[in-house]
Image 1: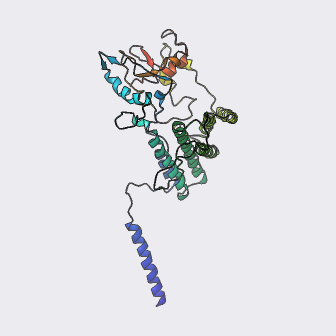
Image 2: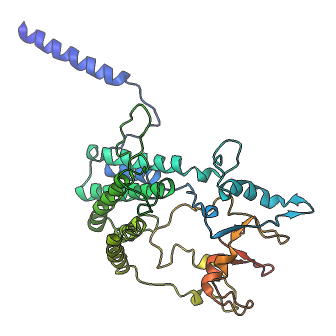
Length: 361
């Protein structure tokens, strides 16, 4: 009798658990990764910066000038109006630039965009031990996510924090940005970490990511990160840190990058036989110089349909462009760096205008 009772009890408990699982609420479009292949797909969408533009804030720098002549007969040129409205608040460093009454490009909301991607990195890192797959596959995913998280934090802290080696700046007390290193949701706001804490975490992630990527992941496309890219970012990281003791590391990691990515593109080879030149030649994913490619970073302020009646609202500054030999015509281009980095030749008229700030669409 006791055996029958025990069997019945086990059966009732099993049915209860099964019913509980059956009745659990879950989203029908929710992805539940079960393998490293599933997690890779999730990473490619939620951790990599695919499909979004991240504002470079060029219009905040001395490389950009605002041109007064953007009107014809007292009225704004229609094709320039959106660009002017999107760029003026940033160009003038208006403290209300992100308020609803301004028309700043959505790509300027870097804070939200990058923390969303950081969340994707954290979810994948936290979930790695819950999926099937080889150690090599898991280490490849971990290396990519650590690099991406470090990259996003470097973008954030250089935008919203003071210079690490700035005059009068104490990195241990100066505020950086909030460090979120887990996918666990917490109530309340996020306090800002110190500059030192943020920079230390970036360094830790990159130094861990490089050997993981080197040993476990060889990208088959420039749209994925690599160990060489990690070394390049480490070089830039120490350059941004800017202390005397960091300069040797800047050289060290730049040298490590160039050991494998040392081929330079001859700009002269991109000039056509009929002396035509296209800026797309240098901005090509097939270029041997390219380490990584992701979504475009042109803001609405920098992308306009060119109108021959006026320069666009924002162009490369005269101080910068005058540093280059601009040449004398279509047969003498002068310094090709100027032509490829700042100029675009329309095929119809040959008219020149700054490429970085006026993309012909």
